[in-house]
Length: 119
Image 1 (cartoon, rainbow, N blue to C red):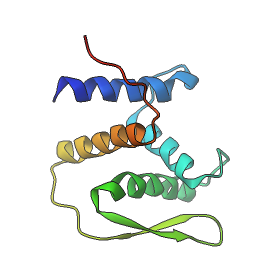
Image 2 (image 1 turned 120 degrees about the vertical axis):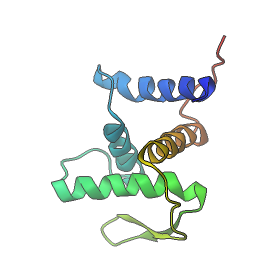
Image 3 (image 1 turned 60 degrees about the horizontal axis):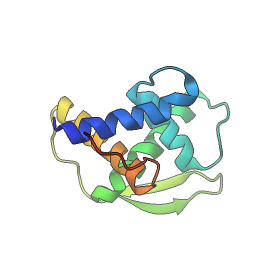
Image 4 (image 1 turned 180 degrees about the horizontal axis):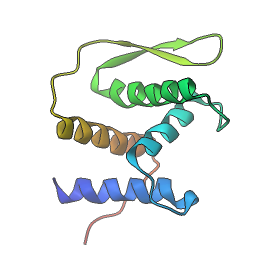
């Protein structure tokens, strides 16, 4: 892994984890991104809704890579995407790295990370 990417990834984890007082796991970060993209604020979700919230995050994160296109919002306010192309076959570690990179890009594109340089 490249040191600059790892430094950015750690900054994302630190920023997201700070309000909770503990280091959040990857799935928790996905969930929070999904809640943000859903735009309804945090509320109680059913188990099925939690899965849908994470799907919202995954689609939002992979859309800039061209894998999904935003179609619109349904009457209940849930966003929907259409897959534009099949994801390439990736080994589990490659999938995880792609998603981590997408999370870092999400934070950078939404200007949620301060610009810091590694000394």
